[in-house]
Image (cartoon, rainbow, N blue to C red; front, side, top):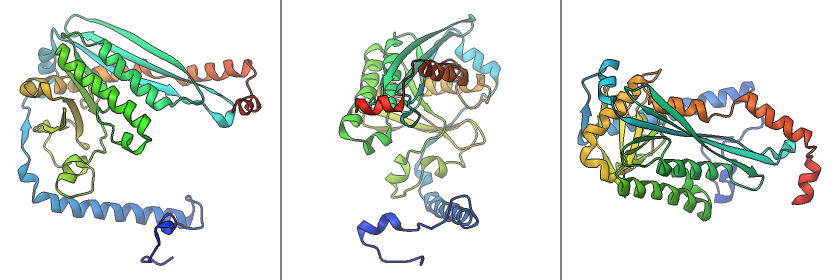
Length: 316
């Protein structure tokens, strides 16, 4: 197929298709070329970004030891919230799914911690992803007491939601909005931490179409961008590891005390096993995840119930 062809809109889906398996000599060559082409495009935009990066303001944290982190966090109650899920498997005749959300709470300096759960069994026709997000947001709200510092493993501005149907999109956005609103009302700090962010907020403001984290990978260690506002949400990119920066989000009422809050975020990361991911979110993930053994138990239980694909199809 020629590299440059004129296409009608209805034919766009066929552009760059090829008649081979992905894992084949032709497929792997195409894959390699696509990756190289993509990175050339990213490098080009990075060079364009160098001209405007000076307009961004950066901050830096000088302390980088666990001893400092322990001192910062001593006496604080910090809570991490994360979820896990099992999707119904239509093709295997398993019409049941599940969502499990865990909140790991720790009183730093006192050796006290505990875990709370929220779980839900789902039917085939329910949207597992949106149920999980709603439950995670609900758990955050439950933990807002005006005393704790909350961390969520994810974003309060899920950009993918805009690609979904309006009803589903509204559930995502409304769930996040309630968390931000409740955080301000109770004066409970809450951070959304995205380790691998694919947001493009900064890039788009300069007319570029590339992920912010790719543009900012040259940030110094232990540095962060000064917060930027987007509606009632603020965000900042932080570089706490040699890899790409991470993104933190928080309600705008927290902006005045950001310099204090960023120390808490960094301290939690320094206590984590990788020094770049909050300790409480590592623990929340550990308790939230539905293990392979637990998944097998659920599948075996369904098999014993003699639920068949034929039975499912009759219900539709």
